[in-house]
Image 1 (cartoon, helix red, strand yellow):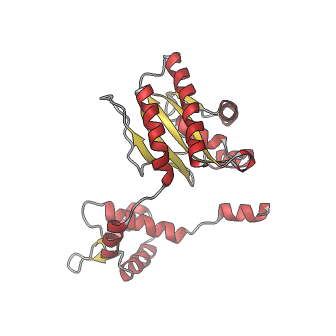
Image 2: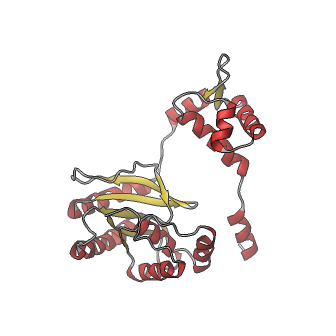
Image 3: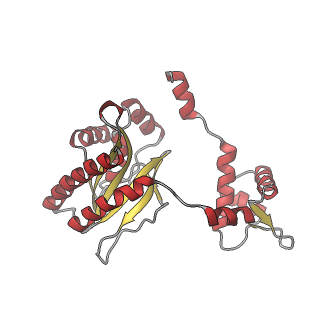
Length: 263
């Protein structure tokens, strides 16, 4: 793929599909059936666009319109699909024993994540025995700049892609410790590449220190990052020994999982 084709592929999108998915998601998640005006207003869509999307979804069975209230609910196609739907990602099953072992050693919650578009998607959670926990169920999306987790994914982009993302999406200030200067952030990403692990001290979550490491598939020149994991330490902010232990064990676990999924 030449540079022009690559740029075209990156910039391509199907806005009407995205809008239709937003409409369907709203109808499924609302506690009471919404009407067309409510849907259009809440999603900031033109009423004519909303009407067209709803008509297409109704015709194909994804939504139903109540004949009395004229409001919308999910259709039987959604029910049938949900009954059959199974998320099948072998990396989740392969990585879990290694992450469970890491969880037992560190006594902290661990999240397996992957990058989808411009956000991070939680694939699995290994819970510690602590009473106080950070919660994020599988399927939860977090910011691509989410502290240590965001750093590992950003670090392994090409420099040109990193600059493009930083230009398009300014670094947010999640906390007072967040890195909001692009140059300082890029220096941090270089450090992540060199060490093979990322760390943040309350940059994404208040009073929470985190360590994250990448997972690679393939060997040598054909190696590519496919996922990562995020260790959340609720009392790691001022305990350098815990952080260094977390980094060392995270790197070991990263290498072990990468070997396992690469055969």
